[in-house]
Image 1 (cartoon, one colour):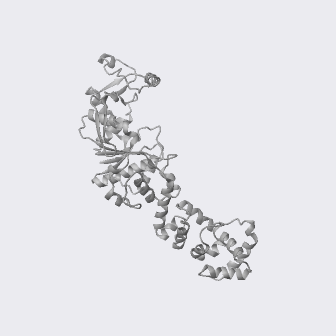
Image 2 (cartoon, rainbow, N blue to C red):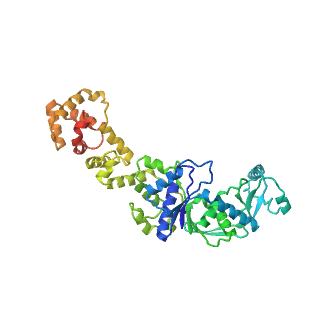
Image 3 (tube, rainbow, N blue to C red):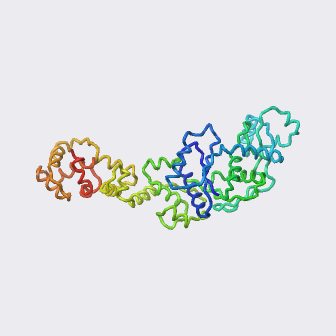
Length: 423
């Protein structure tokens, strides 16, 4: 079993989508189930309907899952497991206040030391615990042995026992802490390998220690993926709104920091050759120009009629025209802007004002011409214009721009719309 565990507290970013894709691919390779676990225990930070948005995005990228689990529904299990650890003397009540802990953290920072809980409450006599009416959290006792982790990307990892303190597993409100909830949930779902961002690497020994303490003897494997570096966190929703196709985004996210046999591939093809151990453990760098180039290739491969739908039509000719514009642009948003400028009313610049009126009148009474050169010759002869006067003005009347693709190619795909465009 593999899992993708997003939090409904923010938009899904490209790092998270990349993790979801890798988990899905490896699940398919291993012929194991793939589940989605919504980590929604922090109710105050949850954004309404963000979980649905995450699931909709997974569907858009054709990432199929067998089950959805909401972490908040597992709290009863978290509580039971905490009580088990308490009963077995593997965890203890901690009466240290938040202010006291913060003061200790401040002291450690001032001394240039890493703060570790000093086990002040670990060996309190039973009578002091039973009779104590102060609020308390629950801490798991620190490990006695080093923790060894198998990581497909970073190699075998050893976390020294003395670097892990008796950390909190339930807060004073008896809500499970992140590491405890994740460790228990992964155990309950019988997860075989956890593929996640490298920023969670320091959480791994804690979660492994929790499962060890609960007597769970299955060793979960790991693959900690380096982050995608860029000037800002890029949301998947923003890329889609900017006109990037899901297939192109998926293709790019699998490619960066990875060895791929070809630039363009489907997820079904990636399942055949993807190798988790070949993913680089160095930070991947997001390159918008590379994604734009890839997106342009995908747009060019689309059926003409399908491409036209991205710009608001269902016409093969408009799809072919869009591909003419793809010489200079690379997203559906840019295409839509270009095509929309053709079919909207145009504010004619002064330099074209007089001639444009005459060209518009002549165009309305002109017969249908298959070829641009024949149309141009007819209008020029009818109005007694020179080539430059006609070409510059007509180009603007037709496209709403002063320059762009070759006018003959534009006319070729718009000749059936001339009467609608030039009024």
